Amino acid sequence: MHRENVNNMPECSRETESEEAATTAANGRQTVKGNNTSHNIVSLISKIADEHISVVRSFSTCLAVAGVILIARSIKLLTKFQAAREIPALFIERNVRLRGKVHSITEKGIEVEHVPIYLPVLSTLLSKRDVSTSTMLVHLAGVELTPEGQIWLQNTLAPTQVVWLKLISREDNALNCLVSHNRGSMWGHCMNEEVLKLGLARTAPIVGVQPESRLYWRLHKRLHRAELKAEKKGRGFWKEESPWERTFKAVRDSSIIRLMKTIFKRS
Image (cartoon, rainbow, N blue to C red; front, side):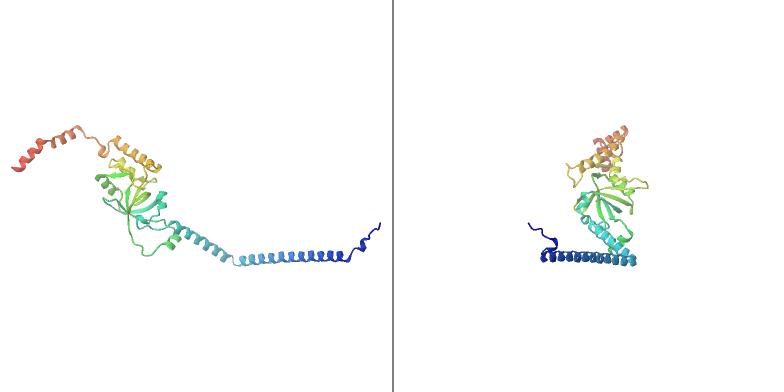
């Protein structure tokens, strides 16, 4: 049995170990060199950013403003609507509130000019020049006005009066809304409810809203409650006539009185 001396290992094994050691050392040098290169690039970028910090901040601000402009355009946040058909369907589905300025009140409804939200910088960038002033026709949702109610509305909502329109539905080129204004107080007054409380209107079906929907019954309950207040207090057309007024009307409309009027006219 022979004891093999370590010093007598084959030459090929020694060469292999030498090559592996050399490769490991080379890889280590390349790793250190790569780390140094990356560190130098980061340092260079940091140095440039520090030297041009105002440019970097301006560039970031421009990107932020551009993003806000794109978002505002996409959701039509600052768009001025010239007609009811221009309002996105999503606005009506979510019952968005729009600000407007009263122009006139006619038998057809309230003529309102849309006044979009104003933001100092964005409004200037997004606004179109030479925008014509046009109005949208607005109806009081769930309300049927009497002639006296229309007169009251004309006296209450003066021209240029700022109102808020809560979109309920759209019918042809008209909007059915809950119309409110502040009238010098902190809390807004809903015209739909006010005119019912005074007995100057009747509740009516809410056009454009499904009767089985929660929105329909919530609005109907709200408006019906306002109508009941007028009925209980005897306001407007709910006011009961006194015995003297009933007697006077009965005599005036009797056949004898009509006959006497006819005779006097012939004579």
